[in-house]
Length: 71
Image 1 (tube, rainbow, N blue to C red):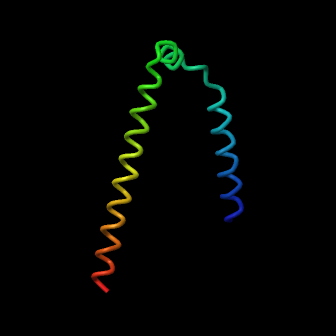
Image 2: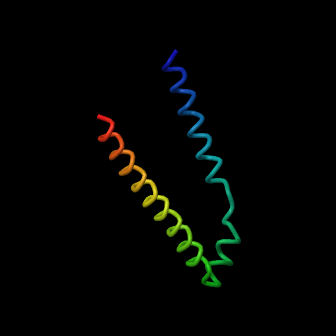
Image 3: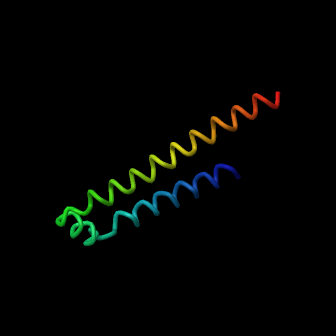
């Protein structure tokens, strides 16, 4: 039974990837790239991701410290 689920999941993933390749080229990205604004979008996304990673790192250190105090 597990093999059937794995096979169905694999087929689903393959079909999902085939659908994603059928998409047209996004016009918004071309417009933003030609105006030079795509770099602003990338910078904002990187800033948000770096902030999230720092937050997770700080919270992990606090939790680890609290776990050591509980022992």
